[in-house]
Length: 112
Length: 112
Image (cartoon, rainbow over all chains, first blue to last red; front, side, top):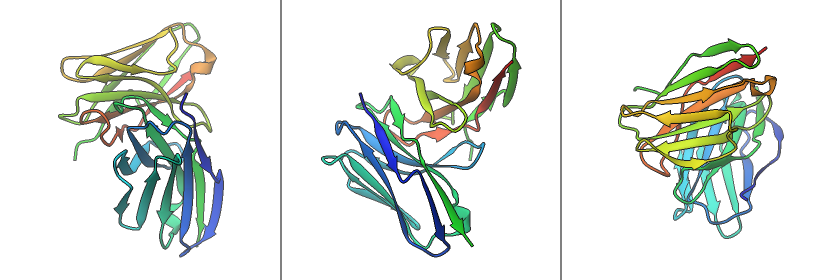
């Protein structure tokens, strides 16, 4: 049974810092991995999708990496801003991509 | 750009009542996913549909059922509601399996 863990559970950083969020999964037979952002009481916004054959994806200040063999993914946020404050969720897609298991998320607070 | 539409946005029901949640995917998206998110928890995968057929099933109670219609919209039917069913219910859609999932704004269900 796939289990997804995110570390740390919460993180507070000053504005401008670069930071790394971690995601680990127990079953390396994944189809893809997706990073989402969720603001309080709101829906999820997709940030990056990495297919199982890919090693990383980049979008603006965000870079996500995937190491399937070790069951790990990282989300790197460069030059953090107060507007980045949210909960970041990692979601692993099973083979075929129809079943998605989420981690508990990392709650990020960027101080101005 | 068109997004995923969910209705209703808010729903209040009594215990043992039934509820129907609707999801309208992004045009041309053929895959729909349903998730349940309790307070302070990560989204839990309930069920998914691809091309109007159930594609995968997660932790969906037997009291719940869902289907995807010919126009690709989906409905989640919930019967014999319990207090513990109070949660945010998200629908997401994608183009095919394993592609980026786009989430709707959610339906907040409160069971009294």
